[in-house]
Image 1 (cartoon, rainbow, N blue to C red):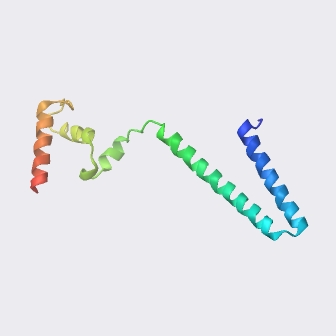
Image 2: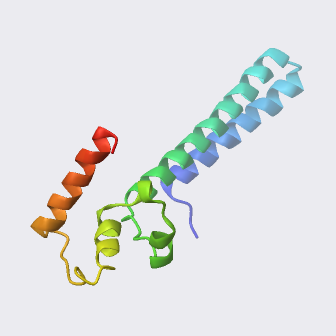
Image 3: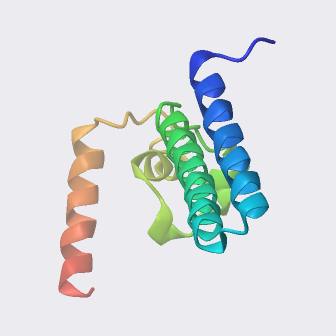
Length: 120
């Protein structure tokens, strides 16, 4: 696999820094060698930061995965979302076919939130 332009540029910069380091060693120039070592360390840190940023970006572009049925059932009540509440309501023999946008379902939820806010 041929390296792309950016990889080639990075490899060239690394080779140049390593050549500089070897030249500083041959000349006994510890001060310049120390600066070159710091440049190499900075390049490594920048590489790690760019890789982390790229990974975060890739992750942000993926659609969120729906939790499995087992994961939903294992959630504590305070972590449930609207779909969990609808599914739990469907367990009742009176609401087997209830829809998430059912006015009674929404009103019940709003009443529960009011009571929770009052500490009931």
